[in-house]
Structures are given as C-alpha cells and as structure tokens.
Image (cartoon, rainbow, N blue to C red; front, top):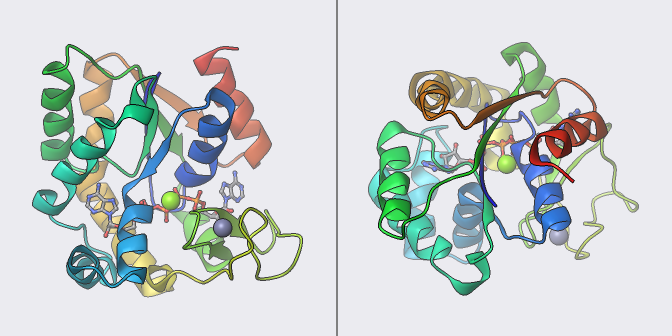
Amino acid sequence: MKIIMLGAPGAGKGTQAQRIAAKWNIPHISTGDIFRANIKNGTELGKKAKSYMDQGLLVPDELTVDLVVDRINQEDCANGYVLDGFPRTIPQAEALDEALKSLNDSLDYAINVEVPDENIINRMSGRRACLSCGATYHIVYNKTKTEGICDKCGSELVLRDDDKPETVQKRLSVYHDQTQPLIDYYTKKGIIKEVDGTLDMEAVFNAIVDILGE
Ligand code: AP5
Ligand code: MG
Ligand code: ZN
C-alpha cells in the first residue's frame, strides 16, 4: 500500500502516518524528519536545508526529490510506505509519478488531513518532537509518560525551531501557495481521500482505517 499524507503544517500528518506505518507494517517516510536528522548530525544537506526551514520556506526540489526516490527504492519499501510531507509541490508530485511509472507502479491513496488555519497555531506551540526517532507529542493532547522524554526511545524532546508563531504563519502561507494545489492534482487522479483533522487523534485514525480497510 502506497500512501501520501497531505495537509497543512500541524494538521497531524506525522501523528497519523506513524500509526498507519505501525498498523500496516510499512515504513513512515517524513522528509521533515530526514532533514531534521541531517541538521542534528551536521551534514551538508542539513546545513542547506536548515537555512530554508528556519524561515518557514520549502527546501528546493533539487535537494528533496532524489532523496525520496532513493528512499522508496530501498528494500523495506517493497510492500509500500506512507510518505509524510512529500510531495509538497507540483514538480515533486510529477517527479514521484515519473519514478513510480518507471517501476510500473502508482500511488494508492492521497489522504488529506483537513484542519483550518485557526486551529494550527495553538497545536504547534504545544508540540514536542523527538529528533532521534521522529515521534511527536503534545503537552495537552498527547502527553509523554515522563515530561520531556520520548516514550518510544528515551531521548530528550525539543520544541522545533520552526514552531515559533511567526514561522508557523509563514509555513501556512507557503502551504496555501505551493502545496494546496496538490489536492486538485490528486483529485483529478481519483485517489484523494479527505479526513476531518479537527477531531481527536483516535477519531482521525479511525476515519483513516475506514478508508484503507481492515
Ligand atoms: P515537516 O516536518 O513536514 O512539517 P509540516 O508539514 O510543516 O508539518 P508538521 O510536521 O509541522 O505537522 P504534522 O502535520 O506532521 O502534524 P503533527 O502530527 O506533528 O516539514 C518541515 C519543513 O521541512 C518544511 O517547512 C520545509 O522547510 C521542509 N520540508 C519538508 N518536506 C519538504 C518537501 N517535500 N519539500 C520541500 N521542503 C520540505 O501534529 C502537530 C501537533 O498537533 C502535535 O503536537 C500533535 O501531537 C498534535 N495533534 C496531532 N493531531 C491532533 C489532533 N487530532 N488533535 C489534537 N492535537 C493533535
Ligand atoms: Mg510532521
Ligand atoms: Zn524518540
């Protein structure tokens, strides 16, 4: 099963993608997590990506597309994957289609997690992220057992650098300009599925399970 997650920053793509990956036993591939891991490890890619991410801008397609295409060609992706935060531009979507076409393959579902802008800022200020394993928490809606420590891997949690309200605002406007057009793109391909992301996490996941079956 090959799935992409669409939705504004903070819509809950990562939260739901992790649960999908666990239930269907497929890799969760988040370009944001890959960039953050590179920043943490001080790689060249990380340095380049950080200069865009800190401003709430998209990392250029040249730095993003090959990375994902290489990743989905790895062995653990043979039975599918859930892509979270990619594609985010029309050229990225076209590049993904091309890459899949050359393998005689295609996407099964594009799940759009719908949350209005008003709800987003509030969610972001309470988010805590694990840069080691990619897990995401919220100080009110999704607490850890021990404050500030990842339940999954025991690492210390951080507030993401791009979760400041000004940067979130910029990310939202970039989303509306560059990423929202993908909803039309995948609607035309007939694979879009909408879920109401304002519901609680459990209800959102149940809606996704209804779509994917089982
Ligand atoms: P990325 O890491 O992908 O960030 P994003 O798209 O802005 O989305 P977020 O991760 O902020 O939100 P999410 O939808 O995953 O929500 P989450 O589950 O955490 O990208 C970061 C940056 O990297 C980009 O700005 C760009 O610079 C760069 N980048 C990445 N991919 C790129 C690409 N393809 N091309 C170019 N540049 C790229 O949930 C948010 C919070 O809400 C959490 O605290 C969570 O616990 C809570 N929450 C979740 N669901 C609910 C719910 N139902 N009810 C209440 N709270 C909830
Ligand atoms: Mg995310
Ligand atoms: Zn962790």
